[in-house]
Image (cartoon, rainbow, N blue to C red):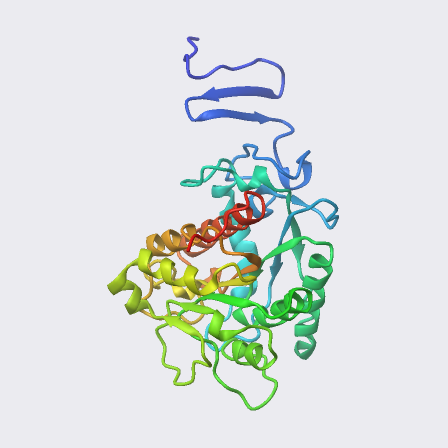
Length: 347
């Protein structure tokens, strides 16, 4: 057998080391199921994308937050959806797709946030589906337990209502926040009572003083709402006409260095690129546009993040979940750029 100069095999039983032109990849009997077997919380090890335990990006599953910079958690709740359900399966779908972003430093970042920070998968929020009126308090308490340790949170939804109780927990710790909101819908429609509704939560967020709309931004909007409550809105057609660079310049100018909560509804993306969602709206941003915008937002002072409305039952070939995983990775990189590298918005 003739060995390739680009590939060296060691004959130790059950172990092999393979060095390729892509870089050093180690695959051993102990480099499987890294969600449980990982030795460190800031690592990037190779594990086959088609197998193994499915934590987010192969982060270790743990409830121990000592020394943890950021925790990824799922919130599998979709009772508040107004159209197609299924986002309760979103965290599971995104975790499965995230094996594609777990094995290397992702392009175009010059650093690897998974090695720069200690990151864990905290598992899911426990949802008591039989008492839906209690779910908002369950979500808020779940997030509060994490952030009281000084650990930042990236939440995976679930429908978009979950952002309201998550914002409540963050506002209690940080005070009123700026909101950076990607969506096809403003989600500021007024309701007359206490609805658990994924179209009214930012109406309540403004009324409760959780966010300051004049210092907040909504991106990709393409549904009619005659009372935007003072948010700075950049509709999808504005972005198509003016480009992503102009959008980012405006967003950074509005947010400055204010503490910001980032929420991304996957239906901001056109259903041609993200069909797996509950309330798709045509005319949205492309995958390339969204990723370009997110990656240009370095310096935003993020204190919390979520990615919501991925509905695997309506997905095709996992393309929506895969996009969600890439966006979530970029959110983590944005957080690392600000809080580990100390980058600030350049005005």
